[in-house]
Length: 189
Image (tube, rainbow, N blue to C red):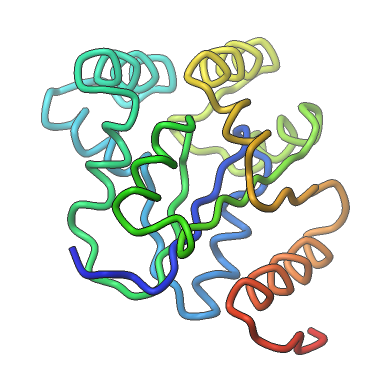
């Protein structure tokens, strides 16, 4: 692994807007790594069905077997980039791994928040194969992720962004946050 100059780690409940934040990061020269990609890669190697329930069950069993930071370790291992944004942090142990590997002064945790109703609407629109398909499924997924420790990670984030307005507004706010972290002047966009 190369020594990145900056690592942005994004957390938030499903459908909060993490992908939109990461899209802005990519526009600003960051390479994105998704912890969920590591989960799906390892699940495929073990012939695990790609569904929300089965992937969640697999991710939990791997955390039990190899430690709460297993997906952080498996995600960062192959990176060679200088500016990285990582999606999918689900617990504080994963953040501690990143901070220990890279130094806490170069690692920022950004939490994205949106209420459950907004998140369900967004999830239904994006229509991903491994997503939930009902309010009941979203509640179950939320409960699973809260058991993993995502609530603590959100509460202890360096920056909390509330995503409850328009996409355009959120993207402007994301750009402003990233520019502040990089110590760049705000470009007014």
